[in-house]
Length: 214
Image (cartoon, rainbow, N blue to C red):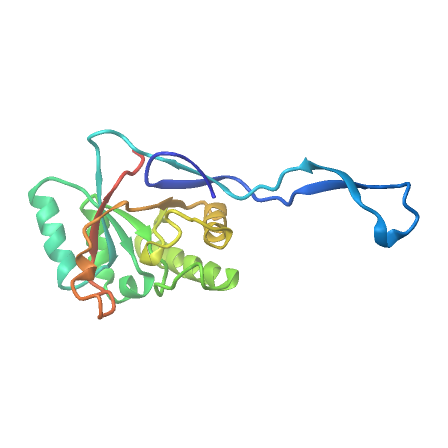
C-alpha cells in the first residue's frame, strides 16, 4: 500500500491498476519449443491503492468515543465534557443509537459531533459491498429521521481499515469515501476495551484520541 502524509484521516487518492509487460522472442528459431525470450520491458507498471493520511496538527487532539450510545457510560462522559467545557466526537453504532434515541439527541444538543460506526459493528473488510451499503444507509437514515442531520464521519469497527495494508482493506475505504463520508482513524487508543483479552469487546463507549478537521 502506498501511504502518504501524516494524520488519522484517510482519503484514497489513487486506485489500483494492472501492469503491462512487453516480451520479445527469438524470431530466428523455427522450433517454437526452443524459442527464447530475448527482451522484455514494462510498458505500464502495476499500481495499488494510494492512501493519503492527513489532519495532524501539533499539540491538537480530538477526543472521540466509539460503540455507544450506552445508557450507563455515555451520560457520565457527557457530564464530564460539559463540566470541562469540552466537546467530543461520538462514533455511534446504529443499532445502539436506535435503542437510546434520547441519549443520541443529547450528544448533539450539547454541541458534540456524531459519526457512523456502522449499524451492527461488522468487520467491513469481511462483508460484501451490498452489506456495507446497508450498514451505512441504515445508520444515515436513523440519524436523519431522529436528528435531522447526516453524519460526516465514519470510523471502521475493530480499527480495521484505518491504516489499510492490502487492497482488500483499502477497497471499503474507497467505497465509503464515495458515499461522502470522511474516515477517521484512532492511532492513540486507550485500549480500555482490552482489559480481558479473552472476552469480546464491551459495548460501552471506547475513548481514543485522534485529529479531526475543523
